[in-house]
Length: 254
Image (cartoon, rainbow, N blue to C red; front, side):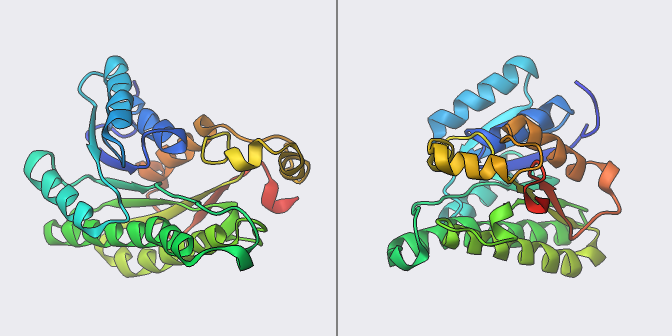
């Protein structure tokens, strides 16, 4: 364990697997206590148990569907009563229930994508910002965006729309919350090997398209995204706010 995040408390959404899990593990390795949040308690308990095995008493698990405002209210009440308001918020939870041309998406899938990917992070960020402003706490928000939010996203158009909005939200929150000492940044991963990206990785033609158009000619791993989150959460990025860190193997420049 090192101490880049010692004495910090972080909350990571979507922490039951993939990038969120990797970030939670990396935070604990750097000395931060971590609250792991996702929809399913069993999966979270497994992640927290793994972290605590390596870093005793550094992780707790709390189920919460971030797209449901009543569950966010319950989460905030639990934090205030049982833990504390974290210093670091990582908005990682996301969904993509539809894969195909935008003209074919059903309204219910559209609504679900925006509920989880945009409304959830917005409302949770607002709740944290208000809590921090009440106490004068200088918090950090890290939003997980995507390369799909910075360019065209065929077959993932609505998902890309939500991630473009996340980038816009990051920049505006950074300006509005900066005077309070609250920093807000985003990470835009490229194609990363997660269950979430299965529709892309399991299709040889689509996978080849991505890797052929990536400078490093490969996809990434969750553990390659986590160090960026550690950097943004730590004092090493103390003069950085409103920025998007592209961790995409060079996809956006190729």
